[in-house]
Length: 75
Image (tube, rainbow, N blue to C red; front, top):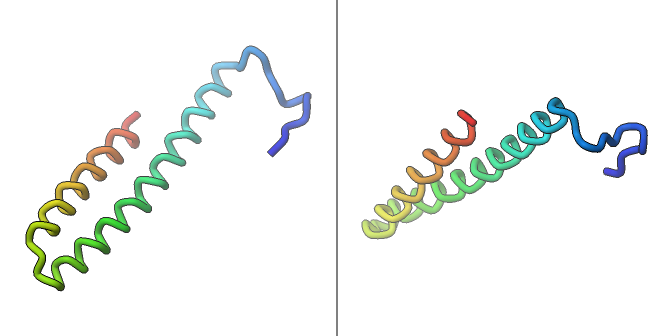
């Protein structure tokens, strides 16, 4: 989106910096959420097939993604 010149501040105010940081964290959380859902779906498929090694690897990836999401939410 192109912003009109009247909305552009340089240097950016503290409010705009905080807002940009919040928007970036929200986008990162959305991406992490999508990745987590994909990993869960793969893990369920691996459980159905009985592939224990893949289930373990995907469970570790799932835990890593959850930890990352918690860090983003706290920031």
